[in-house]
Image 1 (tube, rainbow, N blue to C red):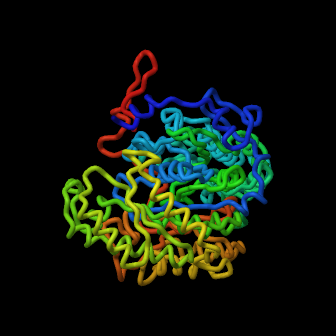
Image 2 (image 1 turned 90 degrees about the vertical axis):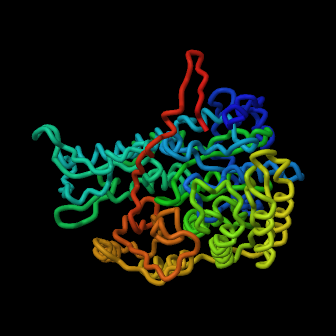
Image 3 (image 1 turned 180 degrees about the vertical axis):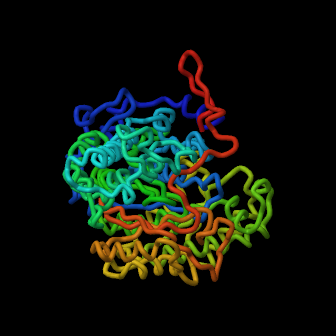
Length: 555
């Protein structure tokens, strides 16, 4: 059966019953129908957070279809509950861009899903809509001030950095001109759209500790400069109060359920190749407040989401992960060994062994943060026993536990062995992670440390406007912020064509964006863009609905 068919056959529990598993009564939560709810922020308990066990699920460099981090995260949480660990899985919300594009939804797959799958993938509780509205309200107020000058800010329209956002893959909106049509229509200037997952409002939501913090961060958003080159922030436009008001419900994490009836918290959805790639601090802390174990994931390969998870999210929020489960697939290892995408279902041990250096590099990166690792082979029906054994043998030689997990086919039952290994690893670890760089390092040094230590680069080259950006950042006194590098997810390098474990490459930084409200800087590398496009055959072409409201084609 397809993921959607499996989800439709599942018997969902009322969300009040799921809340009881977290020690909450139905009156404690804010219900969105029978199967979705918001959890009020009052239930976040910092003392309980310190005692909770946090497992991060990451992955090797993925194929274009991804390697199933979400599927493994859900399956692992089911497995942990099966072996007696009170566990909640905490995930990001899906973006409509991938849902209608190439990757599809983000609610897991097979018998390892979060439900209601259709609702979560299509609009959910409206969090993305609130983010769009708050973001675009600021954009409208910027252009209104440029036109009317009611705050006497003297904004130089050529310096406005705040674009608009939409939760859709739409390459035609990457570069636009606004304000056309005459003097009453605004001041013409170049602008564009980013996808909502790349919005600084999304980043702020996922790092804020509460509503006051959210509003204060929104006020710090840099929108442009005056004619005298002085910075202008959202608070100068008196925009942040109304923006925060739009986010009053979106800031609360969402409670749903897994296929096996266990709690799942889903909140926020930044991409890892263009943002920090992990769910909100509030959601993670809520899970740790209400459970003994939390399983969470960070997007794409460990070089992207997990690095940002440690260096930005955990450092800021005081979180201390107890273990990393690194997801690998036989398909991805053969892909990094030079196998063509169309031939990945064909057994080829030689190609797999040629791709193992990618796995080894990610394990080395986990070790650099000082956190123990377990490798999970996300099993596909096309995987041969010889291929699986080759991965297990390679991990054994490195002293790393490697467990096959058939979560797609068996759900929690297929993850019990992985759950046992992860729990043993968690309970034997009493240390803390080490950040990859110090906040006191200058910006160029921070970028070089991540590029050299995590990506394996030989050097970093600052090209184009990035040198001007470095001077601007120093002038504004923002040099102590962490970095959130925007880079392709397809390679450890900034070149998507360099598979496996590339060496002797140079990372090209072409500009550095300032996300002052979020509290980090965004070095843009390679050809990465913050507004994806649709593929030649988008998933949207296969999605349909009949007269009775039955949806098909969603996966």
